Length: 208
Image (cartoon, rainbow, N blue to C red; front, side, top):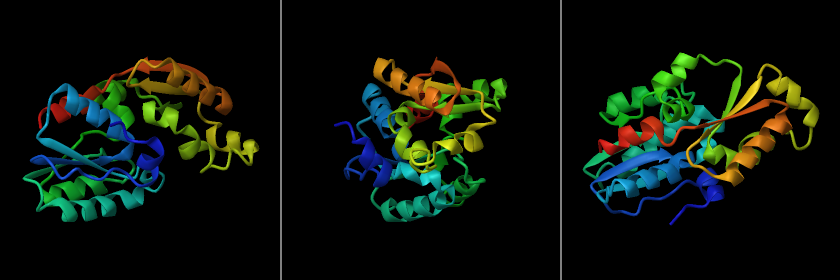
């Protein structure tokens, strides 16, 4: 069953209580993680997700992860954290090191979807990124939190230093392409679409 984006944004995804391995991930990655588990027939792996909107307050990610680890540690044989650094300044890595739990390498999901090495090689500093999830939830993560729906004149203050909106697409979906293209237009940015698939996320999770 495909999770609802609004629920993944605000409340996350509870575990099913099945499997030997539990992934504790970001709600923005839920669809992709579930797809990878299905493709690899990883029936021994369960998934729970924290609310995706935590990305708007990255200082809250590590404490929420710590609480989730404590809540599920005795229910599963192994835990894995499906977050990269995600703006936490190393807090997620420090937590995982203390707890002896693996996590996804990289600074953020844009990097590991494209492939950390490829992303780093580009060295882009004027690109604003979207993924499939963020293309669907653009208003919830960008337009409304930044007040652009009420004060569109703020656009230049927030995005004046960007040149391009880069849509890193996990799937080939014309409707999502249209949403991302419209987002670029709304922000006054050039548009570029790159198909990444699941990138390093798939490689990492397949080892579980």
